[in-house]
Length: 236
Image: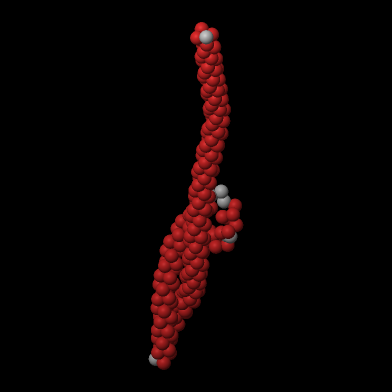
């Protein structure tokens, strides 16, 4: 039966090797599981039919054996009754029943072997599909794990980028503060220099005013002395 060949091919196939060579392992294993499940349905149907056929043949075999024994009993009674014709008839029918029973015995044995074989193939295929389901669960778990790891990596990368941007912002701010501090120092130096010059000018001006006042006082004193000197001869 072709169903046996396909079932054997599925059972004999290495799931790991097939998944390793597949471009899309998840899709492949899903298709494998669907095909296995379809074959399981067919095998169950075939196994049920084989068991039913075996049961029918067993019943017919039992009937044939019973018929054979019945004709044997009839032949024995006919011999006891010295009825050769009846004995011959019973023996002939008994031989036919025996041949039928022999044929049915072979058919029953074949049906039993077929039913047993189908049940064994069904059990192995059910084990195989369970293995495939386990593989699929493992595959999906690995896939989810890889996706989670990738998301974590992307999140970490994003955070690293944000941290880099923050650090860069701090660096820029620090540079700006330092630049403004340098400018303030420069202005302070310029302002200090300007104030120093103003102070010097003020001091110079004050000194000049003091000199002017001293000169003015000296001139006034000298003028007063000359006036006194001029008045003295007149009084003599």
